[in-house]
Image (spheres, rainbow, N blue to C red):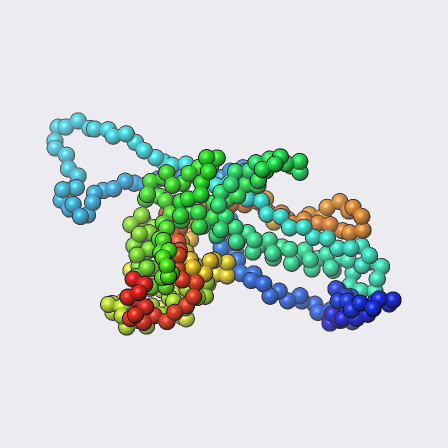
Length: 349
């Protein structure tokens, strides 16, 4: 195993990286590496730096609250009337470039230790895993940004392009004049933001989840997944056990260690995600989301300059929300868990 030792002629204790009496075959990673969105979303091939698609809504058949008043009917022998057509709506998201670099000294070929190729390969695997987590992070937290400046000689104020992540899709904010402003889309197409920001912050209750499920359902979305940190999943675990809920416990229940929540719009899967803010909960209709990949993850060896072998791992992709209404976020929640009691419900309702 790796060891601390003394170099000849050196009185400083050093940690000999890779120099070994015995090196484990597997390097253990302790950082979060779960990438459920990147791993599970369908992949499609992109052919341009900006991916565009069309979405539309049928329009309303009538307001149920108005009942018979809004029922459509026409008299015989009347001419057809034509209203101005609206839609479909063209939506776009730009490609987001991710890059990791890797290097290994060629001196490893000359010392009695693990060889250069092994060190380079292990570092490359580490960087590929790291890039996957950075892509997953961006898919949640990225806000759109138009690229300014190209190449190494970038002008002051240069910035890379960024995609629209889940948070921006739900909140419909942060768009610049260079972006397509999704907040101008019809409400039935836009994502849903449920802001509970208060002081002190509220704890996540079943009524909050029910409200968001209803808002998404009103837009025609059918939520399939809840994404949250462990603290919010613990709150969800209390939903079915709360004696303060005025519902039949048979109507709404948690199954298989809170992995499935059966609610008013059907069954949703509750997923823990290590990269979501502790005060946020996302809901998605995941089958309406895809990844458009312009450049797949490809390791590349770069020109050798000096005494190190160098390489790069680069990926270019973006998120496609076939209908942005497939995403909702509850935010402003307390980042800490609190057991649900009658007092908790009264304070957080």
